Image 1 (cartoon, helix red, strand yellow):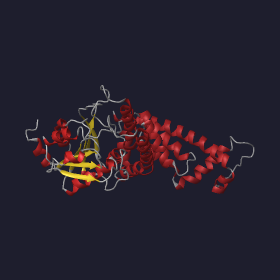
Image 2 (cartoon, one colour):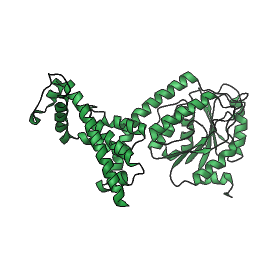
Image 3 (spheres, one colour):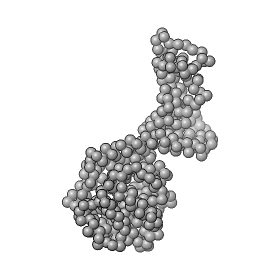
Image 4 (spheres, one colour):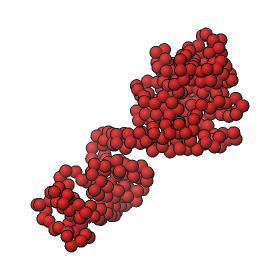
Length: 391
């Protein structure tokens, strides 16, 4: 156990505690007093409260306070708190809700977890969602959020909605586009996209219906969260996943790629072969302009090898396009009506595709299935042979 006093450890890492609050006067004083037992580096953001919050805060002249004229949402309060923390030269901000559900006694746990890391990390308190008193809608919302966070970042967490967090301020995005409850989803997803590790640590939780005031509006806020996740998924498929794959491939030569992603990967040979087959199928099938999005979506959904699937989806590179069109039209001629057109290889043009679209589409799907099967079986046999040769 670290013998250095908690206040000194907080000062060493240049951290502060941000308490966003809106009409939580029943619990606010208890939360502030609990935090002050560990540190005086406190920033309270009063998000336009209309109760006695202002009067309560007047008895704490030594802590930093931000009083917003109108309630603009928790996300906006956190953004204001982060901005102030950076102005005060803090590197980390620990956020704790003012409704009394979080225990300041868990602050040392965040410090222990942070000090054990050697790279940037964002820590989220992991509540036990199965304990008595936790509303079922909270458990459902958390499970919903956990799934989409995994889909968007490939990071699995047990709790993505807890407001008890430790943020590495220097590694957060410079600008955000949400201001309500959904901000806490946006910030962790985009931090993960920036290369920040996002991890859970266990915390205590108290749900007292007599004291706790929730400002979560189920329909409005769930709709906002759903819209945000739609945007994040689109960004994931069209930008983040392709960007990460290109970065990965740029760092490797062909031999490294072959060794690390094909031979040394922990995936089974059948999964590798299926990933290759998926890439070939999507690359040949008539998904014009959407191959990357589709292959990454399916690879993530099926938990197959994304790098292999993406790489082999590029079978439709420009030099191969005439051959694929020719093969698709010729194959389609075997399945469509007597109006099918047989062509020579030298006369393969996009006008032919346009004028014989049904023949091309049918043929391309059949050709894609045959090629996927051939590549899948061949790669499985080669991988199995290579594995035996290495023993």
